[in-house]
Image 1: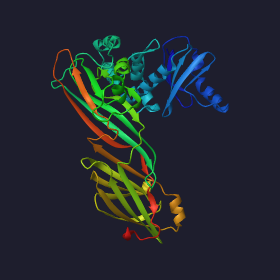
Image 2: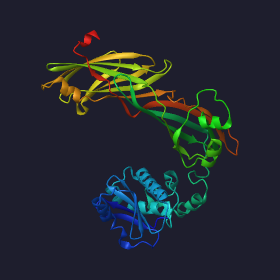
Image 3: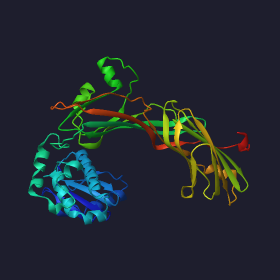
Length: 438
C-alpha cells in the first residue's frame, strides 16, 4: 500500500503528486532529496528503498525525474517498485517521452491515470490498452458511460483483456526471437556468450480464448519421463507476462494463458550454453607512411539452408583517417567518420558463404604502429537469420480454445539476431606482409 505517489525533479521539487491516505506528514516529500544527499555523504550506496522517521521511501529514477512512493506501513517494496515502473511505461505510451515538460503539459491526464491505476494505495489497472479504453488524450470529451467502465474491468479476473472483442478472421502470430551476445578473441576463443530469447505474440482472436503453448523444455520432459524427439533446451531466468498461469507452469510446465488483444511479449528467457559465432569477421591491417589498408573477411558459420539478412560489419579506423577507398566482393561499404569506422553491408549472406573487401585510408598525422594497435577497437556485427534458432528452441504446439468453438490459425516464426554486444577482437596487424599476398 502506498499512501502518496509523487513525481519530482532532480532538485526535489514536486511536479505532481497524488495522496491516497492521510497517514504521511506533508513535509515528507520535501525531505526526500536532502535524505539522499545525507546518505551519499555518509558513503552509503543509493538504494531504491529506505526508512526515515517512520516513513518508508520507495523510488525509481527515470531520465531527469524521480518517481516516489511513501508509506508508513511495512509494505511490499517489490510490488510498489514494480508499480512505479509500470507507471513510467504507461506515461511513455501516452506521451511518447516522460520528461519534466511532458508532466507539465499533461497534468490533467496524469491525475486521471493516477486515480485509475491506484485506489486507496492499492494498484489496480496497469495495462495501457485497458486504460486507453476510457482515458483518452482529449479527456474532457469523456462521457459518463466511459467513466463507468473501469468498475467491470478492475473486478474482472482478466484485467488485461476487454470483453466483446470480435474479429472476422481469427489469427495468432507467435515469434520466437533469440539475440546472441558474444565476445571472441582473434584466435577464435569465446570469452563469453549468452542467448537471450523472447516469445512475442500478435493476437487477433474473438472473445475470451485460452491458449496453450508447448515448448521443447528439458525440465518438462525430465519430469514426465518422456523422451524428446529432437533437442530439448534448458531455459534460465524465465519471465512471463502476467496473463500466464504460473501455478500451472510450475506443476505441469505448460504455458496456459488468456492473451491480451494485439501485440505483447509472452515470455523471455536466457540460455547460458556456449555458442559459436554465427557470423565471423576478421580484419588484417597494414600501415605504411601516410596510409593504412584493411583486408576484411566475413564468413557465415551456420547451416547452408539458412540465410542471414541485413548483415553489417563495423570495423574501427584511426580517428583522423581520410580519403576512403573501398572494393568489396559483395555488398556496399560506407565510411562513418563520426564513429571512426566503416560499415560493410551485405543484404543477404548465405550459410557457409564467405566474402572479402579491401579499404584504403589516408593518415595525415604521423603515429607509430604501437599507437594504432593500442587504440584498436573490436569489430561489431549485426545480422538477422529468419527460420532459425541458435538454441534449438521449438514450439511443439499452440492450441487455441474458445467456448464458441471457432477455428483459429496459429502462425509460428523463428528469428535469430545479434544482441546488443556481439563483438570480435579480430583486428590484427599483418606482420609487415603486403595484403595482396593473403
